[in-house]
Every structure is written in structure tokens, then in C-alpha cells.
Image (cartoon, rainbow, N blue to C red; front, side, top):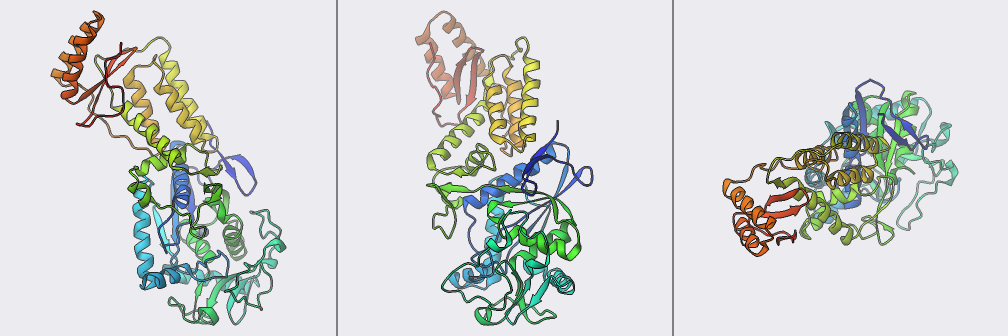
Length: 480
Ligand SMILES: [Zn+2]
């Protein structure tokens, strides 16, 4: 079965083919570490993790690189506004690098909580200044860039294909109209963007700066991704991803720089994750509705509940967040965990045709993920398997646990045998139930409960789950 992925560059679902057989170079734009990541940002990182796990599931070895933005990202994503890190430094009264260090650590903690596999290769913008300067030198040499007293700009009219990714005509791009911003009157076109800012005007007191052949200053945000992706993974990349908010400016700028400097495509496949919305609007820090992982945990949720919620919606569809939808995800995930903890009274045999059924579930799961990472479909395959009484419990559990793992929802193996006392009480209880002595059977159920096990009566006989001293919402009386 083949893996198909939607490529934003060609706007079609394509059969994925790697450049180097098994290895897949995967570059994902990393965080700007000036504040907590909100759960809309985290949705993108979960989608990228699902992509990575799917590549592994299809037999590839993804080689994953990511940048950490700790300088040069302006508050409007273009050249205007203020550097987000320096703004964070002012807010917290700390050095910009202390701010970056703090939020970088928080970011990796968030990834860990969401069971996201960290990239094998990570580089910070401030650690790759020489590589960025090398690209500027090449672009100036090839007349793709020009210098004004304020900055060095990429000349977007010097290439034919600027904006091909976003499908936006070059002259449609406007400069952010903000009152606090004084634009550079020597910038040739509104779509041109800064590669290097000099320490003049509003950047006169920029705290982070480096020498360059053209004067002291600091790099523009887009440049680091061109430099870092190339130095970590090479060019062209197999896959480059990011949030859909990068489709209009950041990614077209990365492409322009990398391709003009090195005469090679930056990446073959571009994949973008959709927004997370709240009350019909995009979630974002500037929108003032940003929710962070810590608040989700404080409300009593496991970060994996959030991961499960993300999986219930296809990554290219906007996800409208609500606490109700998170609660539903929590219930679903806890039900799966509970199902995996069940122990039957006696070892089960399968009914006729169960092997074919299991194979067909395995195929359906694979084809769901192979169809542009259709995680809602993949989850529904797991639920169908869970509810299928033809298949012995332990085989359903093995199937679900293995495939939840592929989706990055880890399941702990549970003890698979009942203590002797519970087993003998359970056998007596079965005898009483078959004689319709339900009241006496219920007395034994309570004894079993006191030994730490909840009984669930099913058409295949009683199943037991350890309750670790606390009662769950699951049925707690002998069914009649
Ligand atoms: Zn980037």
C-alpha cells in the first residue's frame, strides 16, 4: 500500500517518493521562543509527529531537522513591528537569550507531554549566523538582494516564481499598515523582505547583533530556515512542513532565498497543517484567545487527551476547540485505556472468520494513514475492531495497542492474569448467575470489587479491570 500526501506546491494529493530510498529528510519550522506555545501551535507539532510516525510505519527512516527562532522574528511575520524575543525580554526584564532559553525548555517539555518524538537535529538561529551570512553574500553576488541604509532586502522581482506556493500574485502583497511602524522608503517592492537588519532607526538598540561584511546587525526571520534546513539536512529536502500561517509569507520567502542562492529546489513536498479555532476565529497570541498546555492540564486533562482530540480531525481541516470536545476526547481515550486493561475469566477462542476480520482492520488502518494521514478514519478502524465480538479480547487489545502506538497514543501493558482469589470468586459468581441467583452473585461482585477488580459482563463472559482503589464510571452492578 502506498503513501499519498497532499503537496501544497502542486495542490494535489501525490504518491510520496523519497529521494534516497529509505531516508526521508523532513524539515519542520520550529517555535519562536518568546512565550508559551499555544495549543494551536501545538496542533501543528502533533500533525508533524503523526507524519513522521506514518513515514516510519510505511518503512521509511525520517531524518528530522528543526530550527529554534531566537532572533529576528518580527511581530507581523514580515519586516515590520518589533522583534518578538526582544519584546519578551522587555516584558520579563531579562536578557533576550535568557527568554529564549526559558521558552525553548518549556517547548521541549510540551513536546514530551504530547508524546511527540523530538527532531534528531535542532539548530538555533543565533548559532547559525555564519551560514546565514553566506546566503546573503550569494544573493548579493547574484543580484537577488540589495542594500539600503536600514537593511539588506531580497528582491522578489529578481525571480520568476515568487509566491508560487501561496498562489498569491506578487503585487497583492501589502506591507502591514501599522501606526507604530516606519517603513523603509528605499525598499523597492512591498513583497521584498529583509535578510539582514542594520542597527539603525527602531533597531538602533537591538540587543542581539553580530558583525557582517556589510555592517553590524541581525538576520531576518526567514533566512534562518534556509540556512538551517540546508546545513542540517541538505537541499532539496524531501518534505518541508509548517502551519498554514506560513503559506503566505514565511515559506515563499524561504523558497525564494534557497532557490535563488543555490539553484536547487528547497523541498519537493510542502505540507501545511490547518488552524485551531475558538469561536470561529483563529487561536493566536495577538488575538488574545491563546490557550496553553499548562492551562489544559490545570483543568484536569492529560496532554494525551489533547493529542487524541487533534487526531479526531484531519490535519488540513480547521479544528474548532471547545472544552466539550476535549472532554469527549478524554472519555474516548480513557475508554480505550480501560478496554486494554480488561482480563477475561478464561482464555478466549475466536469465532469463525475472525482472522480475515483482523487482516481487514490492519489494511484499513494502513490505507487510512496512507491517504494523506486520515487520522479520524484510522481511529474509527480501531473503534470498529474494539466492538467486534467475533475476535478474542486479547487479539483486539493487541491490535488496538499496536495501532494506537503508531498514532502516538502510548498504552502501558497491563497485567494479564487474575489473582487466584478473584478468579475463584468469579467462577462461583458465574455459576450463581447461570442459576439466576443474581442477589447472591452481586455479593460476590462486591467481594471482587474489594479485591481491586471491576466486573464487566459481556456476551463473551465477564471481563475484569483493575481499579486501583478508585471507582470508575463504568458499570458497577451485576447486569441481569
Ligand atoms: Zn521556517
